[in-house]
Length: 597
Image 1 (spheres, helix red, strand yellow):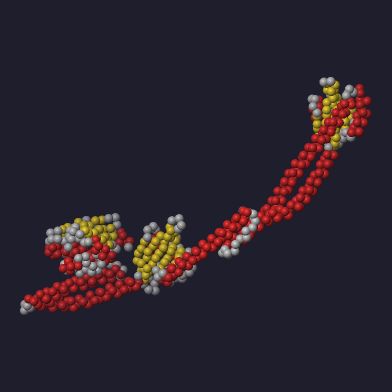
Image 2 (cartoon, one colour):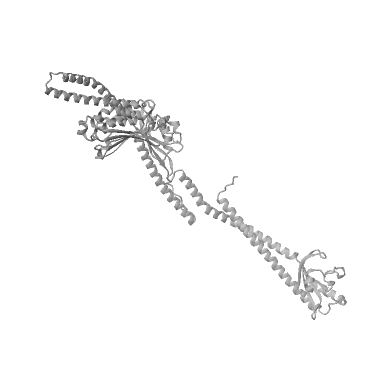
């Protein structure tokens, strides 16, 4: 339903006029009633006085036998006073009447004023007279003879004269009302405009404010209330202008910062609609910088891995990070971080995605790996030649003792150099396999792999006189690449045995958790200081440099273990205490999780 909306002045002005007219009508109705009542009371009192005067003149003659004398007397009194006078007996018969023949008149015993007068009271009534054909006011008073009522004197006057007088007064009141309304109409219009004009000015000013014109203040006019309202709106406009200026400045600063960032920024809401996209992200994904707000991320950036990452970030409350590979005009490696976006009330409204371009770093790493692999491969030939030549000289019986000692040093160092080259080649091979899409994994029993690693370390165990205890469920299967995992276990066992005292024990314990398989290699050796633990899996890092070299280590064994763990989508951890031994834990995902990856 539509309601007709009118301006305030056209609501106030008719209201004022209607109010004045209603008040005037009420006052006129009240005054007319009072005038009518006053005239009727005056007429009633006049008729009562006349009836009492007639009663005094007719007292003692109120009998049917006196009718001949009473008739001319009553007619004379009626003509002199201009009043109809009627004498009525107690039985209701009309004794005489100043205007009509009593013989032709009805019995008046049931008339209201007569009944009231017979009871000893003054009777008054206004009704239409069938005899005279007009409305009259009747006043009847009892006539006493001692204590006995012997008759009634009734006087009457037409009320038409009263009505005519009142009608004239009504017309005068109506005319006065019209004059007053005509006089007050401009006053009402002026009052209405006085009240509505300041509001109209404020409405125009508010519309200017809504259009951004906050510099033009409102006129402070009208009543005290409208003045306070205008002052309040001007103050609001000034504060709003300052706030808008601050917001525009902050927005400009944010836009400048986002535009100058080399990291890509993408903000999406809970419905995966883009809130903000900075210049770097737009250039990376080759999308326009403008006209992206409110569009679905799938429409703008067609990268399945990024879309899955955003969906995963929206499904959880904690920050999330990962590394993604984007395919387009060129292959791009990105490190992405997702942080929840919260509103004013603390509720999440979306996520903020920060993208770091790792393409150049990955390319440098690829160049480094290729360089290391190529150099290592090229070194194998001269190392093999040196070893062959040294072995030949060592087998020659004509070589003296001094030369034998130097040849043994050359042979030992060539063996160490060969082991170092082999480890570098293994590292490069593992990294290249991961970069190429991952190693081929198959579901295998874990216990045979552990026994195979033990067999490879059997000679070292015998040499160091260290016992090895394996605790593993017989039927436990894991999805692994068998040569890689075996190599990792061999490296961990080799370190554990080398750093254990003679006669001690090394233990391999395998346990199952909800989504992980834990392979713990624990020894009772010298242990590692806490400050070395964070860097223990770095290439060529040695906690005890002198002892490590004396034991023939290359410094790459634990780095290889870390890369093997990453190739299986797992990780490697270590706990150690000096003098108490160390525990290396290889964490591998269960079969279900491996398949999901």
